[in-house]
Length: 451
Image (cartoon, rainbow, N blue to C red; front, side, top):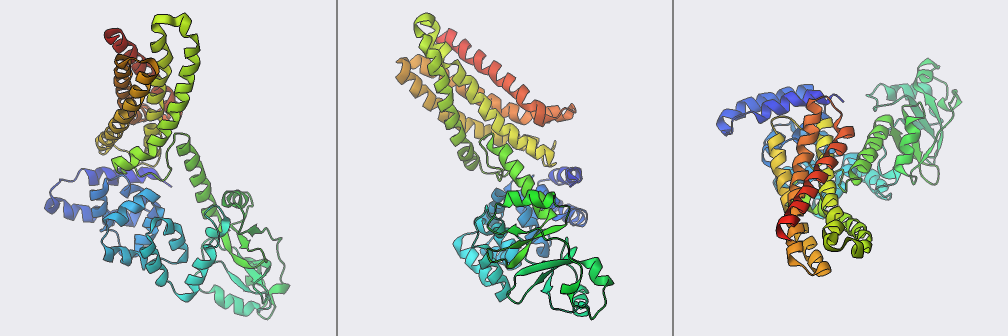
């Protein structure tokens, strides 16, 4: 996907005047151009580059029949922003456009009431498919398969099958799957062999390639790798009885692999890969606070080991023991912001126009987490060493370092990208250096003044 196409649209839309009457005609024209040029995935990425209010203005300008495709391509957090801001009527209008596969993709984001409504709008066939997929967990392949693969009875004649193929074919179709009367998969025939064969030949008698089967109860990430390395457009998915349920194609496989990689990258910084770029401050703070707490435990563990040398260090022992806490808290806070910004840069969502808005949002997140954990650490320090001055010193230093870290997390990758360095590779190194220096100078400098 060419993310560079997004930047001009994001820049032009963000540069529009704040007066609605002046901006509306230009915004409508730009969105019309964007829908003609960009894919649903690109449109989703573009919308995610805007805070909630302007995002909803743009959402309403998307053609309604394209809503499902764009909505599905968004992150979970971004979908919830859309649902939270849509009225009840618009929510239901959106959900009425979903088929079983689309509804499975977003079911976790819907309230029980909306899910029941959306399911009730599926036809009987789609409802059965939805119910089948719901028998499998999110980690199992059966929950994510495509149902619209080509399947015919192994006893059908070639002429009849060709008439079926005159209709628009599902994406990534290169074979027709053959089933028996019980729906069990018994073989597959290449489309090219079907077109070459005589009309009165039974399709089950045509040459067949070796079946590579995927089990619906298997792990979806493992299945994705099998598809990618199979050298086929898609692989059939069967249940425990051998019945054909659907297929898993290359597009789904690569999407699944990318989602797994994004999740691992975000998890390494204690984040959710589904976090919206402009998620509410409280939600972002909550997502990151847990990891900061876990990191605090490991930082204090390191400090405890340094504290074993208390007799030797004597007068400076408290500062020496607590130094790793200051550096570590700044480092993890900065790495969380860095991960969000690097991902946004890679997808073309972070530009000159929205950089300041992002910086302001991240500053609020950093300030909130800084105050919270500064208080916690200050109290622990007071209880541990019995010195309220030391508690105040480390609390101020922690706050300074966390705020510095989130500013660096936004600006460092942006500056590195401008200098043609890879922010994903160099960002963590620069960020760690900044937070270490600021953390130690702030802590030791305040310590020399107050203690």
